[in-house]
Amino acid sequence: MGIADDSSLIRAQGWRTLAALHAHIEGDLERTLQTEHSLSVVEYTVLDALSRQDGWHMRMQQLARASALSSSATTRLVNRLEDRGILTRILCKDDRRGIYTELTEDGRALLDRARPTHDAVLENALASARELPELASLVDAIHALPTGASASVA
Image (cartoon, rainbow, N blue to C red; front, top):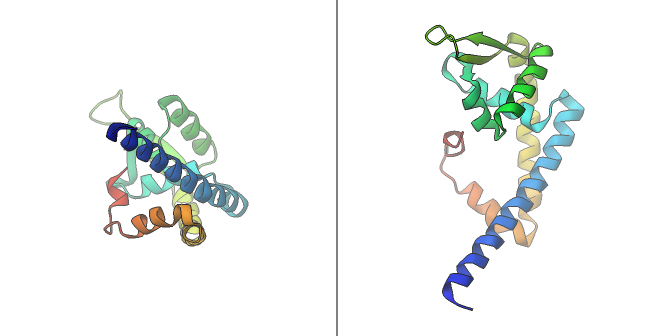
């Protein structure tokens, strides 16, 4: 096997490890957020992304990127959250074709209640993943990220 083949295998193994850690964390988050706050992980992600914006709103395309959803899936999600009174849509004053999504007061309150739950479950899921030899190095890499590094991803 040549060097190129080895690097391909290493990347594939890294991807499988990342996917395993993601599944480990997301399963715990999904169960707990749904049970305690009637939120899915992706709904929480949208609320969290909106809360971190200046002016508390985002264009739909930005929201799709932040939540890793397609445009149509983002629209359906925003529709559901808007029906629940958690989000609202407003027209962009500068570009009438542009639509912003913004948290409502109820949405901010829900996020404030859900954030400690999310953070505790994430911390516990990472701690339990750290005990699995195949995931430990990736968890260590996550903990070694500089403060604020994850916020710049979205």
